[in-house]
Image (cartoon, rainbow, N blue to C red):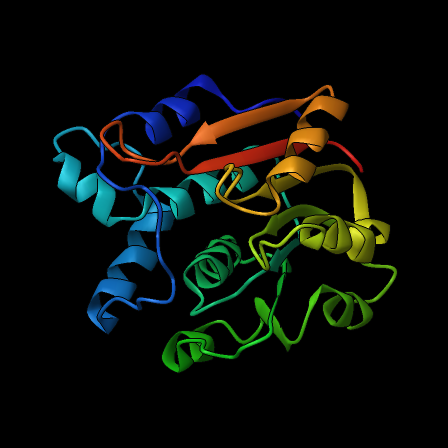
Length: 222
C-alpha cells in the first residue's frame, strides 16, 4: 500500500472553491443524487469549471479514490451526520458489486432516509459512539480504512482509536478530518503525525479561504 498518488493529490489541491462540506447543511435531494453519482464516477475533470468541480464535493471523491487505490474492502466512519461520506462510500461498494461494508456511527441520527434505503447492504449505521459501533462489528471483521470525523474535543480522537484499533487490517489507512489548531483534537493529531513514519496532510480549503481545512492520513496500524 503506497502513499497518496500524485494525480489524486493534484485533484484535491487544484481547482474548486471551498472543498470542505458542512454535512449539517443538507443539500437539496437532487443535489445529493448528483454528488453521489459524481463522487464515484467523475475522474477526468477536463472542461469542468472550478465551480463544477467544487460542486461534486472533492473530499468525498478523494476518499473514494483513496479507498480504490488501496483496494479497501471494509470502512469504518465515526461521525455520520447526514451521510454524504457514508453514502458515497456505500455507492462505491455497490458499484463494485462487492461485499464491502461501510460501518458508521453518530450520536444523533439525522441521516437522509431516501439515501439510506438505496444502500441497505453496503451501509451499517449505529446510533451511538465509536465504542458502541465497535461492539456491533464482529471481531473477525477487518477494517481497511477508518475515517474519523466525530467529536473534536481533546481526547476524542484517541478514544476513537482505542475503541476501534482491534479491527485494523494489516495495511489499513486512518483518515482524520479537521486537523487544525482551531479544534481540541489538534495536539493529539500532531502527535500521531510525528509518531508515524507514513503520513500525508491534505488541505481541503481553497487558497483564498481564511482557515485551513486539513486531513491527516496515516498509513498503517496504530
